[in-house]
Length: 177
Image (cartoon, rainbow, N blue to C red; front, side):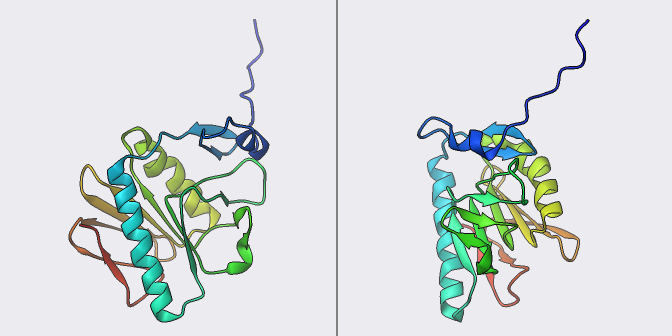
């Protein structure tokens, strides 16, 4: 009988070796392929990015906001690479031309039909343990936003159309229409 087979551990090198245009994320050495985003997904991403960038600019803030595709190397290893839909980084020393080295302060993921378990479970655990301060899961189908403030160990749910307060900024909320 065969001994227990070890699953291949992939690295960031494997992500960079993917065919042009193919996108995937890497969590603990396992590759997760990504479907192209829908128009609704892109519209929500654009509106969130715009609202956050405008807020940061209006306050003369140091934080920077990036929309996918943007590389986030969560841990100091070569087996974790994600591309959150929105990343807000306040420690700009984490940024270089390849992306963000370490946990962003705030991550927003917009659910696609094929990635629900990934965003609600796998990434939730990974982001919390990596040191992300705030994580939003936006579900366009249910028109709901789940907000995790890891520093306070809280989880709240909001409907589209409600003001959603941010955890990393005390005077900023967003309404998703």
